Length: 119
Image (cartoon, rainbow, N blue to C red; front, side, top):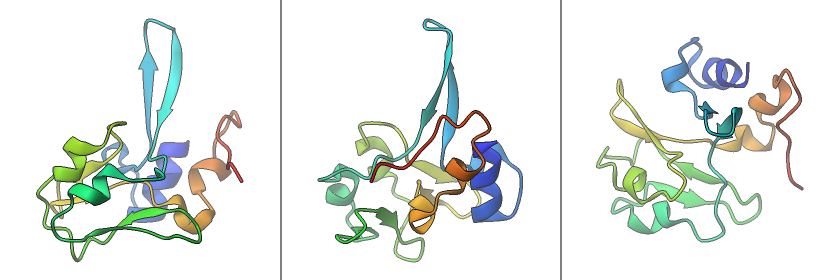
């Protein structure tokens, strides 16, 4: 549900490929794992972006990508230590969790209640 809620909020469709949160099954541990941007203290993705398309809001701590400034070079995708930045194949720009402006839809619609907000 969290992937659907994210995708529908951002794209108005139901397509798991364009969700900014991804759920993976860890077969070794036999459990589901949610992967999404952790909005790093010192974001490597922002450091490697040659076009200043990635910014960190100091008041909220959210790291966001400006799709207008992003040139689709994918440097941020390769630099992200968590692998939580994806290429939007339609628009050819990088996408990642933007925290939904501090009101994340993935948290609202997480059916088992496994996701939350650290404050």
